[in-house]
Length: 300
Length: 268
Picture 1 (cartoon, chains in turn orange, red):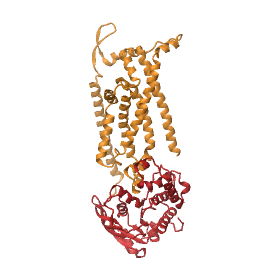
Picture 2 (tube, each protein chain N blue to C red):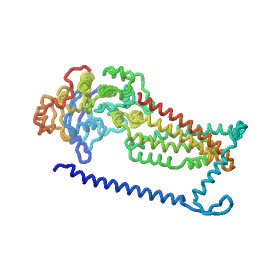
Picture 3 (tube, rainbow over the protein chains, first blue to last red):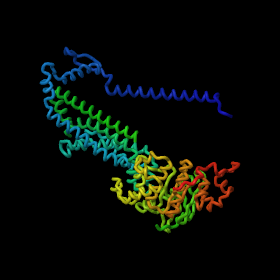
């Protein structure tokens, strides 16, 4: 008996019903989860707040808190007058010599941490790729090492390294480098898992060792991905290194901490502006660079 | 270079329940040009990979001049793979690297870790690679990326890579299956030249009977992992062919149907 359109129609209806059912199940589960987590995080909390005139009232926290957020931000705004803009500006950025130096330190921490992270991540990305790993034990081990390095937050690593190596940028470099190694190693190994295995087999068949197979057969295929991931990581690392000084690991973060604890509100906005501009510049430069490299790949 | 006899004794390889190669026993004399034929899945490819040790046998052994190959490990295994060069249906080149670097891959077995990681080769090695390329008419393409070459050119780069391994045996796994007739002929002629001039043993998997007849001294036919026929081309009668390919249903089995070789002579 041939399978005809008449046979197809009931099959199709059933198929559609099943699809629709699974859609609604997934949608309901997601909605319930979202509601439950919002409830747990206190989004719907109603609490006693002090009003401007000193009286107490019941209010929804989110609504009651928003004006205070504005109040805080307002405090960080510097006083800038048109007639004395130069001196007002100088006052806003009164610690600029220290900040410029710390900014340089921040970028250098980000750079050096990226260098170390790339080296570590690249070496581990080959044994951590399912298709390339020399043995299941090594695969399991390297994957766990990468997982641990990227799961522990940079600030935790930084605290440990400040404790062991003292206050200063070295602790920051190590902390961010280890985290980068974990993240980059994971991304690189995923790129490795998508390569064409035939060149690797070609190198193997010519008598190449495992390292030769990686260097000659695998690496040339993933270089564009590696460059792209590395530039993205550099941006992220500069961002991280601007906060890592909070625990004494070098860079602008230590100034942020001082400004917050001494309630130097306008310093906060100045520092924020410096970090924002730096990250934007690095973002822009690395995007240019990445596009140029991608363009080269296409014409080559 | 000293050549010896390659011997397969009771060589088997299973993949799960499938016996890809089933108790194959063969002697391949030095300098022979041997064609292996058989339908897809007959175990031809597995047989070649077992010889080069890209895969390990489930049972049996391979010996070369009395030396057991199947037990080799580490450096000795890498040296065996170098001595027993292999070319593939899909060329297996590193497409992003230039042609010269691809040929130099053939010298990696003799390199230490650091020089290999730094991609450093001696002048002598580079000269050898260029000679191999010149021999295969590929010198002008030496600095092009391998991926930009045509299939036929890529296969000749693979042959050049195999040559700089200074091998004793050349294995070719369906080397012309992805090529058009003109390129297929050039590649087969190149293998023939290497066999005649360098005295290398050549073992080539083919799915085209007329190519096998035209180039091979000896034809081995496999069926379901076993050697079904082993003899000179002239002994390969139509009846035998029909059995090998299991084409009982076909009224007339035409060799021309499977042919990819152009009937013109091109010197390699």
